[in-house]
Amino acid sequence: MEVKAVAKYVRISPQKVRKLVDAIKGKPVETGLNILKFMPLKAARIVEKIVRSAVANADQNPDIDIDTLIIRNIIADQGPTFKRYRARARGRGSRILKPTSHITVILAEETI
Image 1 (spheres, helix red, strand yellow):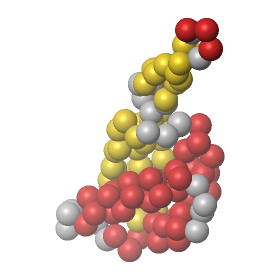
Image 2: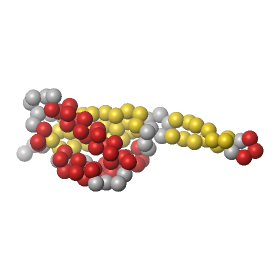
Image 3: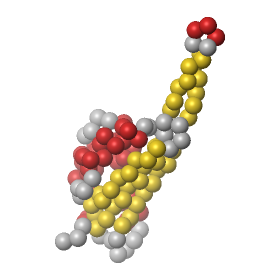
Image 4: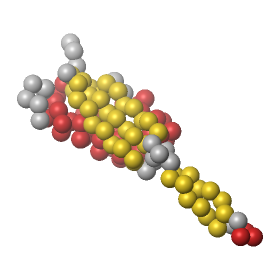
């Protein structure tokens, strides 16, 4: 049985989230959370919060044993990009792009 948690419009580039996804994909939840706790990336704190939310979602289902959950997949999709302008010389403006992400964490029970 699968459980998932989704965070939308997170103000971080999906490219930065994808850097740490491979480090925890396929690992037990407890191990993945320990890895994320000691990573010095901003994305690690965000993903840790989403993984904890997915575990809380799994805890609501009495059929799922949360001790046997593994991180099946983490998907970091691109959300809308905020467009801003900064004043530049000679009355011009330069565009600033602020990317957002939609992050999905999928947990599943470990099959023996």
